[in-house]
Amino acid sequence: MKKIYLAGGCFWGLEKFLNFIDGVTATTVGFANGNVESPTYKEVCTDATGFVEAVEVEYDPDKIDLEFLLQTFFAAIDPTSLNKQGNDEGTQYRTGVYYVDPADEPVVAAALAELQDKYATPVVVENLPLQNYYLAEEYHQKYLEKNPGGHCHISPQLLELAKNAKFAK
Image (cartoon, rainbow, N blue to C red):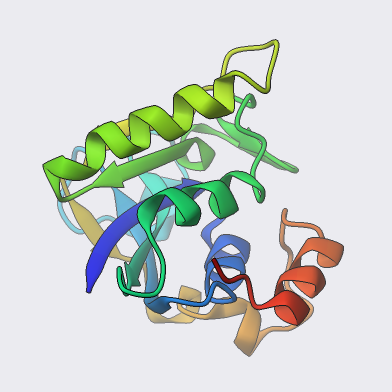
């Protein structure tokens, strides 16, 4: 199994979306690349901790490669929106790919370059090594499964499409 950390606005909807990808074996939601230890959601919401809401994605490289996982992730976000996805605004909602395996960096860079070719405005998705990651509180884990009517910046249509398609390479 391999891991990558993806940030694309509020982590609730992104986690649900990513779980529809065939080859994703586990996810958690939490806070990545900030400047304090063990932050709470309330602290992250202040924009003072430097953290981004992120999804830890464990995936089976025999079923799915990182390039396909990234292309599917890019379909769920607005890669040109800085610190904002849907109605959620603030640095905690920035977009990013945070890798733990240095060999993943050039794959991410190439995917972002290909993505940039599709846009006239700059793509603002971060491509950085993971510095730290802390699990969000339990009530955030699988939030939209526990609260089906919960707020999500990913459109219900895209979630329904993902659910029915079970994205596969």
